Length: 468
Image: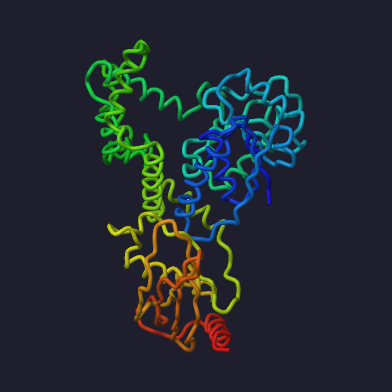
């Protein structure tokens, strides 16, 4: 396994630790806070519950997580070091000096800073400077894929590409910020919305809850899957972006916003904002809000995954990189995954319709195993399910790991019959079974027909192995 060092825990450092560990990296953590292990453990628990829900393939074997008394000890053997200490330049400088004195000569170093430029962080670091970049993530790091990768002129193309490769391998989207700028890209956009929101509250135009509702019920949903410019391109109708700019360009001269002005940051303003926020969300603990946030993100990102769009497309690509061919075992293990939160119903357990999806996914894996894969379907051939009998034997809850073992009970000519057993990973209890009968079909005639010879041969061999 690869090794990563996390210097500075907290919410962001803990999120980095969780994502790296769940993607198969050994994680070495340094944080002087005596409560760091407990705090990071809570973040890890959130991540272990939700990150695997995004994937329909087995996750990598989780790496080890260890805690170390010094930076020097933590960075030993690390391929990547992620710094997430508080936003004080002097503290970061001393932290990087200690990293430089102890880290290996090939290790890359990322900083989670939301505001500092990489050239500010690289001063007086010798050879480490060329391997240090800003790698600014978004909370929760273990779910949100965006990381702003900001190099300086001292970073080579080779080091930048290597950093991108590592970040992509753990399921993140490295946005290469081509020029140094304070607060990078995303935080500059967020700051402008935040500033205007403070004015709206201060001037009595809207409460904190009303502003949040304007985002989550309106443009926030559009931004989640189209961003800003693509949203406005669609708003321009058939004439596109030029029409939108012509129609709404004049409003840039109107006094709609106060983005060049900042409200006085007084105790009264703080009390006003905090009081409204308490009224809005004070009934729930921070942990309850984190769980709600994570569940909502999983459901939204899985919906986008179903459509192959935005963050969902990114998930599909990463999932495909994790996908491994089935091992030739008897029975075949055709599924090994986590029950996602959007599969449950009002009773809190997995909806019966999702069992059909599980067994359908299991048969799809078997089809790919015998060569009836996407290319085979594109060429005009497929297997269609003709009949299933599903037995529901035990409750299955969100977040539970399960496997599906599949046996080929018939595999001759144009017929396949499969028997699937879905078991809870924790205790091997059988949760459901499915007896499934499929026929090979020509997609041109939409009628049953024999499979192509190479598929038929692999199916018959598999059926013989399972029969034996």
